[in-house]
Length: 364
Image 1 (cartoon, rainbow, N blue to C red):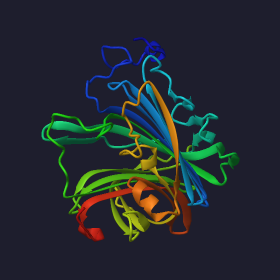
Image 2: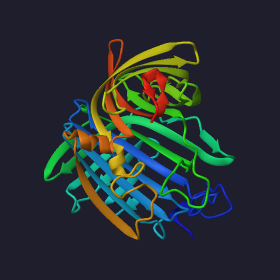
Image 3: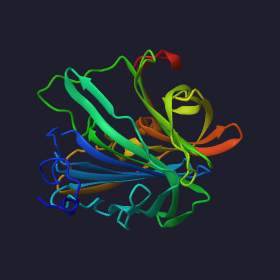
Image 4: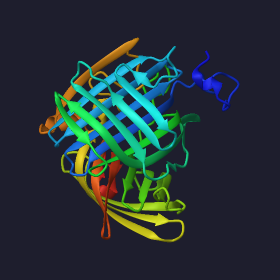
């Protein structure tokens, strides 16, 4: 099937753009977008998923206000024939200027949440090292990703009240990934069940200061041995400074007593030139991504066939500890970052499952 992308001189396989070079149902292209104010009152996360081998495109948004309420809208549609439109019902995503400026919107709808936000990158995107993993000889993960920091403008409307977004008081982050992705949809039937690790740590961070930004992505087993690492320090457009690659990162997180969510932390970035950068983190807000469909929540899971079109919404009471326990797993924790006298802001994702003695966890 021909699409507008087939007009461009950039084909990579002997087929049209509506197909990828594998039949793996896990092949996913995903966009993640985050915008938040620097006081911690407002925190929005949105995303889109494209699954050509499942004929699905889905979208979600989560919006947390003052640590009291989180709204979520989730939608899914049949991918074809509109394969070249990043649009699911009232959700849309537009590239305004490649690798620099994008627009994310949720039009007025019956679920009481809408917005229009334009992201403008203030530093070049960082290209992560590819992620790959095998399980019993089968490709479990094979992904590439880039991330970028910037500043947003626009507005968010929730239950009739409109919140304005400006570059002075708000920050934004985004990523774009594609390839064979872990999980997605429901487990396969008729195959050996997946391996359950004894213990595992995943953490992703992205942050921006006035004169520089940084990102890292780590996976470790329960003994702290690295399974994957990627990271870099980048600088604003016009600075003429090249990105500095990171060799490793040392982490020291402190956790809430009731859930495995960070309540503070310190990072030490070890760069390839031998330099070190120390950053401390103080959480200001949390957006719970599980409500948007990561790993499944209340009937909605990314990459799951939900008929030709589906949309729903929910509201989570963040003052209810039981509700938070039910929705917490992959959490976007927005933090104030401090490096010496510099103050910045960014997102930390941190998941520990099973045993991880460094932080006092002895099992599931």
